[in-house]
Length: 165
Image (cartoon, rainbow, N blue to C red; front, side):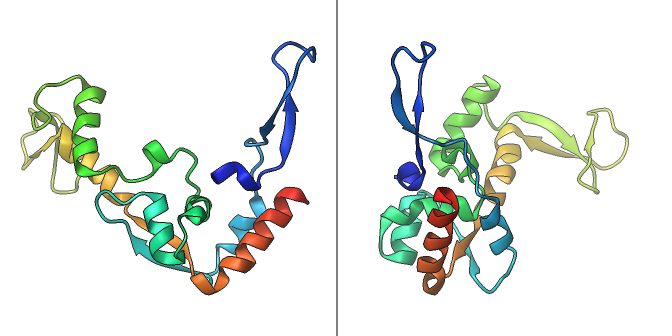
């Protein structure tokens, strides 16, 4: 699980009368960002339709447990929306987000410079559907960084050391 390596804090909802322990998920590790700035430790990976962080981690590191490394390496906070959606989930998401029955209906128009223009624009314009718009955003999320497998142990040690530091 992603938060397994995070330190635990006591948390109370009733001013300390009762408390429980939770992972300190507010903690961010800035030192990791600095280490990721070198292309020596990471490679690019294109997420296939339907792949989850667990599937990618299993393909790259032979262990789905390291899905959290994939998320950290890409500064993904909410995998439900920061990770690329599968095509079928994307279609449902678009229909719900815009509350439209026809996700292929025109959302807006763009000109030759890919700038949004009004439907009465006199120059050349191209219709962009709700689905095309969201698909473009979703597709941009498919290229991710992965920590090269040979650097995984070092990355995990730095990360856990920084968290517990």
